Amino acid sequence: MNRKVYLLAAVALLAGCVYNSKVSTGAEELQHHRFVLESVDGKALTNVKTPLELSFGQQTGILHQLHVSGNMCNQFNGTGRVSDSGELKVKELAMTRKLCTDSQLNELDNTLSTMLSQGAQVDLTESQLTLATAQHTLIYKLSDLVN
Image 1 (cartoon, one colour):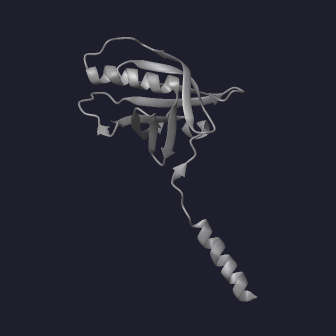
Image 2 (cartoon, rainbow, N blue to C red; image 1 turned 30 degrees about the horizontal axis):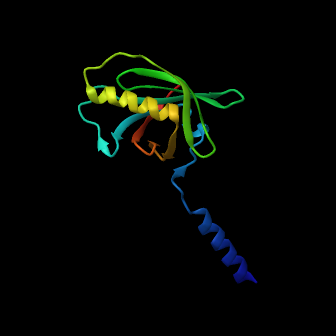
Image 3 (cartoon, rainbow, N blue to C red; image 1 turned 45 degrees about the vertical axis):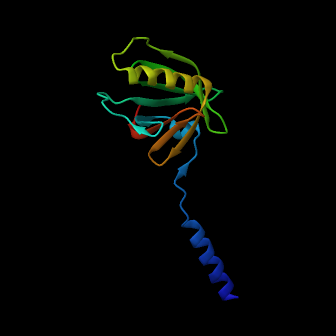
């Protein structure tokens, strides 16, 4: 009888030691965090003078809308939702419309705008945020908390 109790206790202890680094991709895990873009479609960013940011503010309201803001070439912000399947969609995205001398940044503006308005799969693992669609993958690194 004692052996069964010890065996059961050992199994429970070992089960508690299993670590899963993947974090749920709900709005609760994204809010108040700021991320900096590191790579686009598997290619590291080069010649970028200012950090390209994506920030998530407070989740509000009955619809659980999440404030989303950031910059590429242009500044952008809006409110969106993260679905139960982990898709981030920002239907009303406001963005400044200046033309930048860096063609890579102009293209990234269009890419991110399309991804957010049509919906992108969100994956948050430890300090890395991935936004992915069938066409593009953006990988961000957690930078710090925002208010």
